[in-house]
Amino acid sequence: MADTATTASAAAAASAASASTDAPPFQLGKPRFQQTSFYGRFRHFLDIIDPRTLFVTERRLREAVQLLEDYKHGTLRPGVTNEQLWSAQKIKQAILHPDTNEKIFMPFRMSGYIPFGTPIVVGLLLPNQTLASTIFWQWLNQSHNACVNYANRNATKPSPASKFIQGYLGAVISAVSIAVGLNVLVQKANKFTPATRLLVQRFVPFPAVASANICNVVLMRYGELEEGIDVLDGDGNLVGSSKIAARHALLETALTRVVLPMPILVLPPIVMSMLEKTALLQARPRLLLPVQSLVCLAAFGLALPLAISLFPQMSEIETSQLEPEIARATSSRTVVYNKGL
Image (tube, rainbow, N blue to C red; front, side):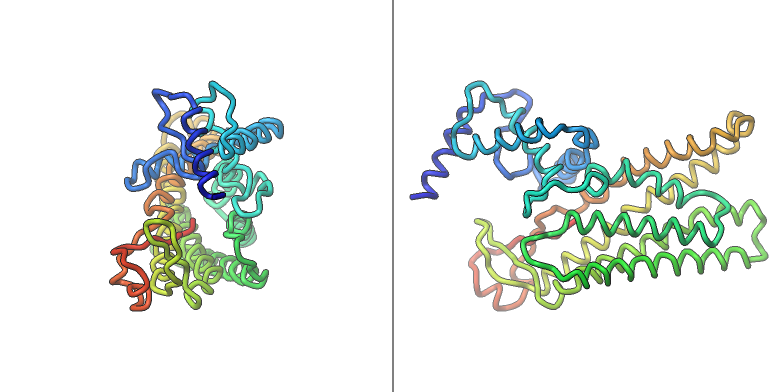
């Protein structure tokens, strides 16, 4: 009876929300845009990383949460539009953790990833890095990544702090080791001219960061490979726990983490090497850092939604590819699993 009442109240709330020519009908807890296409996922994640949500006041947050509660219980006031409901859900999802319902610290929200991460990217790409500066920027980058990962973790099950520390240390050690090692090799390469050596050094952060990202994913989510992850049928019912689905989830996430730093750490060096030859920057070298910062910001803003849109958050896999016991437990031809970000 409780489920029937909840369904009826939600239906009443949906009809109470006035129609909007721009916004689709509101669905509580569901994405606004279709997740079956890359474009739909891209638009969805543009909403997720929208930095404007960083400036939402406490009062506006309370109003958004209350509006969604009213919709859930079928007590919406007349005149509320679908656009207002989607906006309220966007604000809540950007600020509050979905499992704990607690506010996420601003620098570690997905909407804060670009504004707070761009200065670190600029630091990673500074020319003529010393050993100390290379270590510092790689450490700061992986520390920021680790805090973002932890703040946005799946908190439905308790996770020991040792796993977080293990992933963090593994990422920092791998990033610093590769960056320092490649810099030393470049410095010892006698065949390079000074200009070529400087250009090559600018590309060193990418392999260091990409490998560290993979290391971070594998170490922090290794337990999923051992225990498996939940797979659900088309109605959202739990079918079982699959280690094969866990491998697919980790592979997709690792690929995303390799693609993400590619435009951020590869495009700016190429663009800056061309811009530095212009008369404007040669006459005004003080503009180099501001221009590089703008280039990094643009690359970051493009790369993040593109990378995380590669795969759906809820990925689909055929039961024939999973363990026999999973295939026997459901009549569905496919099941879905939460890939993670």
